[in-house]
Image (cartoon, rainbow, N blue to C red; front, side, top):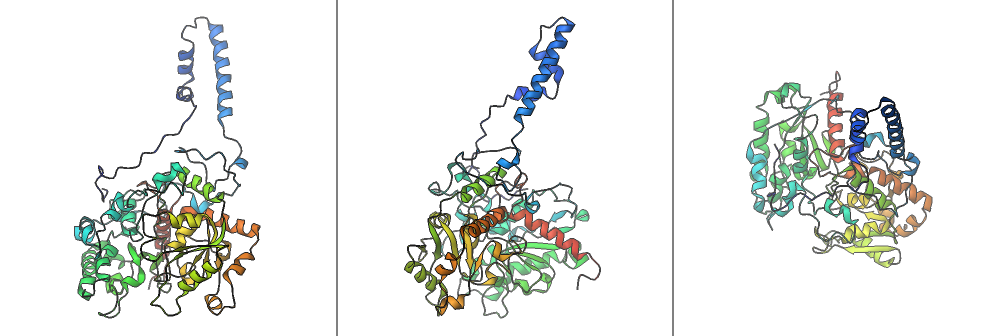
Length: 513
């Protein structure tokens, strides 16, 4: 059963246009039955020789049709993935493409569930359902109800046409960065390897919306430690009563925590956040977070949700070609706001540097609400820039890194914990193949110029790096269909494969402690 987050009548599913085609479907049916083909085309045939002649002639025509309908050699296609079985859109004919090898890690294989099956707990309603239904009180400043519409994807992105191809506009949403709990829950209910029999399960998913539960208390000055831990303690008490949890002490259980790890690691009552991760029952549960603690084995980093949620394989392929062929007018860009309360604020330094290099750098000052959901200015900036500067956010990571790479821009990082130590399952193993790392201290003391570093890269090097970024775009996306894409693995697929692989590895003797 799905957990609808919006009224279907008020936020209908975007209509997907059917492809135009010149194929005669009656002819397609005739391949199944040559006898039917002959009967349909020659009903008045009475003489045996004439019928035989017409039959042979018709079969020859069929062979010609078949061979002519076979697509040309893959030399003329630039897709990182096989062409989808059903295309919902045509590629823009003016795009030029380059051939790239198929990446096995991003193409779905057989559906035999060799790595195991997943059982989804039916938790008490206050741990997920009721949190969503009370969306108007999740945020201390304003209602979160709009952000949770469309099954957690948020409102359809109005005004996005200035930045994206027209037939991809319906795949863009103003998605909140803290909704992975809802996105994962809805997808896993429809996963091909979900089982409703816990005795057949390799993995057990706990659909607890812990990020939504604690979110409002993070900003309330008078919130108590008890309030911030209330829902987590309720979940642990419930799940520890389940026989399948006690059987392996939680080693085969996992959940999604829709905020950064540090929001759940409070050590003292008066400190920030919840102490959920430090609770005894959480010790062996694998946790999927948008920012992990690199020193905690049970923390796994997954991509922040962005605004692009493809409806089909072809949406992905068309978007890859679009960003590959984009005319990028700026060498680099920076989108962000100062942190004036922070001493030696590095963001402020980058803003100043970018403004001083205005002929090479494009600036988006995100002070106030200029960069909030509802504007395409950041996406347009990344699409127009070869490189995008990505300092740490309020924590070590920021959603902007994924916004940047989805736009086909090459990220420039200043902290290794912003990406390299975070998203092992989703990024290339060689950081230099898709990104630039610059020593922030050298930038601070003036011994290194960001512009000069980036100008040293040749056109060939830039092309190779951008192609690497584009190749990995599917792994950063959360697809719109409840069952996922046809043949391409998105971030959810990669995460589930990783969890099942991890649990299989844990079965080795002596692995668990």
